[in-house]
Image (cartoon, rainbow, N blue to C red; front, side, top):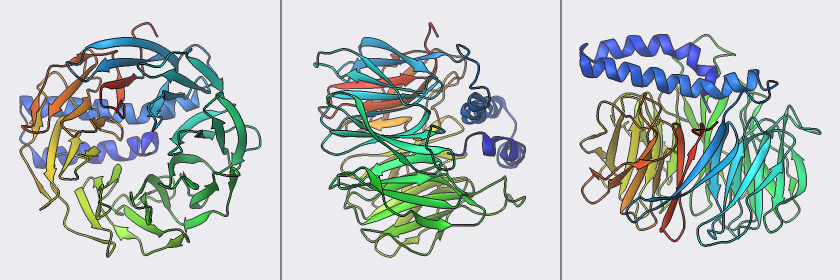
Length: 426
């Protein structure tokens, strides 16, 4: 969750780095424009937080439902102001959207399911969501809120009637994952308060003692659990608020489960942005300024970083685990073969459009045949671009609202949903 904390600190350095790597030309100037848009998008939620007291200023968002067969938009649903995330229930019944500036969660019936669109006020600005494997409990992390710890809490919501069960004090929650067995949820606090992961027992919705990672200058940027439930991996970056040394590398800290033993941190590149785990739990991958760093889970050691262009960010791995797709700040998507950790030829999106470079901006169908990419705000209408994984060729663009930030695909693979931060009527 680099956001505005890093934008001011890195923008000058990053533009100087670009000049060192590329000759100045038409394509490079377009790349610079794309990167400026990406950095502005990263800083946008921080600006919104600072001016949250101004009601009605922040635009309404929108969810666009489209068929994966042909990409035809089939429904458009207005949600709250400044939505920042979307998740789908594992059973495919509902989509949930967190509306940061409305202090609400929107529950939307998925395709083929009847029922009203419902909104729940959560008494704080939602920052993270996760759902138990049985789809019965939605956990929402929030900044602020009454009874919060260090400005944060997690609210447990019963999905069957969309009502709150309990508010659980947790310091500054930024990401939540639920173990495959569904017995524990893990909440990542941004730090440095200190930097910690808090387990929540799903049967009682009560927190256990936090797992402390660091009391120093690091703050959390991402969290992933291996599909076998044996490890949590926490990505951290040096807090620009706490240090003036931007040369410090990021790191990944393994947490052994179920006991919560913190293992030796693994150095990765500067300013890590995203982390994903392989379906077979053999590897995790971290994107940063250095490229994409593979980490072997058996030994918790990193191998050489894979070069995938300027500042890689969003990533998604195909269900068979054979290919990792990575977007970068230059406006390209690279396929990486996980068999040998070699990058293939970049997939170009043209001069007018560029992928959004953040977690959640890429999604893959359950059969692994199509990757969907959210196209960022480069002056063009908002679109979702499909990539056929068999050939890595682009399909026809799918029209959505101006500022798509994430895509999810239904478990049955027939329908997908794009979340737009700014609707046409916002």
